[in-house]
Image (tube, rainbow, N blue to C red; front, side, top):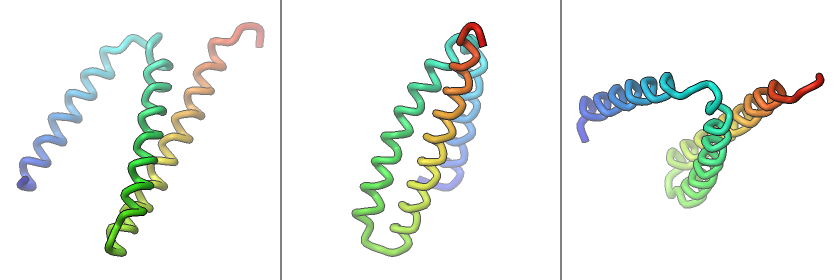
Length: 92
């Protein structure tokens, strides 16, 4: 694919994602975030496989970067979800 096609796909995806997220009621944000944390776990597994099967050192470095970034996403997602769930607890 050409560079312009990839940039176009990225821009359309960003616009559609922003439109979808802005229309989700705030009550559904916590369950959706929990689901996205599970999907990020799949991303970590894919990055592990990609890094393990990489033949070149450049590909291995990209795989390791993907593992680190996906792990940061998972941990941050769980921390934010935990904070949001604490807001629903009564009596504290």
